[in-house]
Image (cartoon, rainbow, N blue to C red; front, side, top):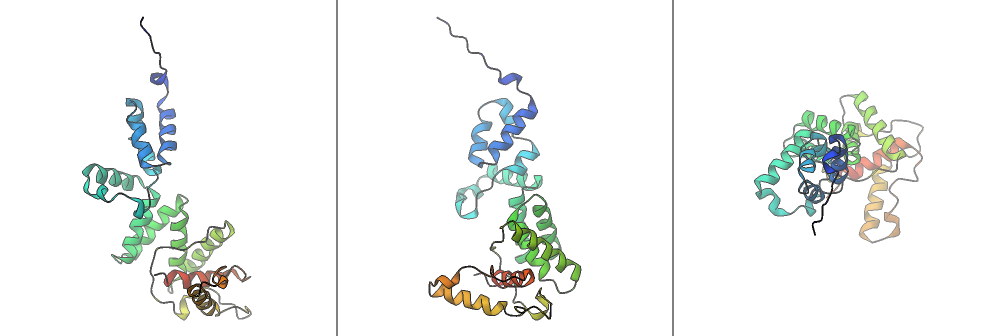
Amino acid sequence: MTIHCCSNIAFIPNDVWEAITIKVATDSIRSLCSLRMTCKAAHDAGEADIVHRSVSIPPSHATPWWWCLKPEAKRFFDRCMAAGNPELLFREALRELFIRRNENVGIQMLNSATSTGHAAAKYALSMMLMLRTDENVEKQKGLELYRELDAAGLVAGSEVQMPRIEEQHTVCASPRCSTRGHMPLLYDYRRHAAERNSVHAFGRAAHIPCIQCRADYDLQAFVNLP
């Protein structure tokens, strides 16, 4: 007896395949590779720039060490970078800023990653802009980005080490603010409490009503990361 199998895969439009592939790519690289091996339509859809831009890049500690030795893996990541993958843009921006010392290039890359909704890039960009001493407009833009993150509950730390904060780096300039200038003390208090495993280590500056002072606290945390 002969069994005939019918499939409608050949009739699925390319844009639908692309949408499916993007959805799978946001799960993991492994899932994307598995899908692309199923059929020619899936393989071709995986070649689109938007797929490489959308693929989920694992954190550095979860990336297999041997990937850097594989030419295929290198070509894949280069393609993702060229397509504007926000996670890779963010990581490369940190290298430009703190290894190669190319501030303008790093800021531009942070802007590109931020425009895609990458929260960590937006946080790093807000910190970098607020630390500028030469352009008040840039500091205000950094504060606005920080406000948006704070309102969305996305204020978080970063894997970045910055120079020491000086007086001209502070954000709060209101002479009537009762907490102005006290954020270094609060940061030191939280840090020492953490060393003692005290409950007072938690909370950051969430209880401070002044958004500028909360930004100053996060600047302290940002530049003192290990």
